[in-house]
Image 1 (cartoon, rainbow, N blue to C red):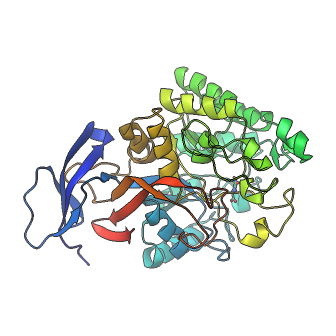
Image 2 (image 1 turned 180 degrees about the vertical axis):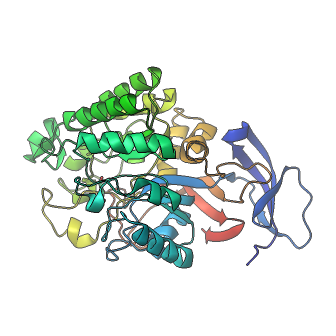
Image 3 (image 1 turned 120 degrees about the vertical axis):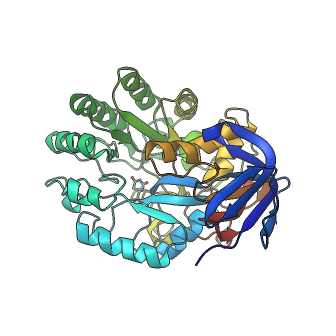
Length: 443
Ligand code: DOR
C-alpha cells in the first residue's frame, strides 16, 4: 500500500542532523519526505495542522524488550510496537532475552516474519552474544550479522567470560555491528536496589555501584584491546560515565546510552518519594515504600549519579537516550515481595515527556533532546532515518510539548504498565506518529 500524500502544516520543524529549528511545512509523498519549508499543498494531500506542535524525525529506541517469542503475558509485537508508536518511536531495537533466545538464524528469521506481519513500527532485532545467553558458547556472529541484526547482547546479564567477550569484540570490528553490554558483576549484584542509605533504611538487599563499574571498566579494556565497537547499555552511575568519557578521549570505540528514569528518578523513589530530579516538574503523590514498580536493573541511584549522567549526556560521554522498556505482568511485580519481584520499568510511552522535562529545565535544547532520541542513534547505526531531509523515509513524530496528561493503567498501549509514573502529571504528548508516511498512531 502506498501512503497518501500528506502535508504537515505550520509546525516547529526540528531536524538536528541539519541544524534546523524553524516553523514551516513538511510534505510527504511515496513514503518519503518530499519537501520542507514553505511548501505548496500537493494535489489530494491530507493536511495535518501542526500549529503549536513540534515536528521531529521519528524517535529511535535502541533498547526495548518486546518479549517475543515467549512472554506474551508481558508484551507482544502488537502491544509493544503500539506503545512505541504512542511514545513517538518509529524504529525500535528488540532485545534477545526471549524464549527461545534470539541466538540463531532460524529464531531471527521467524521473528522477522512475525514483525513484518504484526508490527506497527520498524523493529530491528539484536541477537545474543552467547547461545541461550548462558555465557558459554558464542553465537555465529557473521551469519546473524548477514541477517541484519543491529547488535549482539546478553542483556539482562553480563557475559562473564572475558575470552568470549574479546572474540565478540574482535568480530564486531570486522562486521561493524556493536557488542551491546549489560554491565553487572553478578556475584556482587545479588541485591534488589541500589546499596546505600535508602536500602539500609528499608532493610532491602543492596546492589553496590561497583558491580556496574567493574564490568564497564573490563569491557572498555577489551574494546581497547580489540578495536571493536562497544555499546554500553543503561549507564546508571556517574563513575561509569567517567570511565566511558576517558576511554573515548583515549580513542576507544565506545558508545553509550542512558535511560530517562536514571536521569530523573532516584533510589528515594523506592522509599516512596516521587520527586523528579534534574527537572522542575511537580512531584507526584508519595507512593508505597518498596513498590516493585521502582525496581529496575541497574537500579535507581542517588541524585549525584542522576546529575553526573545528565552532565555526561551534555558533554557527549553518553551518546543517546534509550528506554530499556521492560514490561512485566502485574503478578511478577505487585503480586511479589520487592526482593523477589522482576526487574524492569515500562518506558516507551514516557521517554518523550521525561526528556522534554529536561528541556523545560534548560538542560538540553529541544534539538539536543531530539538528537539523543533520534538523529544520534540513526547516525551511529547508519539507519538512514533520524532526519527530516527531503528524500529521507517519512518517519515523523508530531507532538504537543505542552499537553499535560496522566498515565493510568488504561490509557497506555503497553500490555504492562509497570512504572512508578502512574497517576503523575506529565507534560508532552504525541499527536501523530508516521512510519514511511503512514499514520501509525493518532493521539
Ligand atoms: O530491569 C531490567 N529489566 N534490566 C535488564 O537488564 C533486563 C530487563 C528485563 O528484561 O526485564
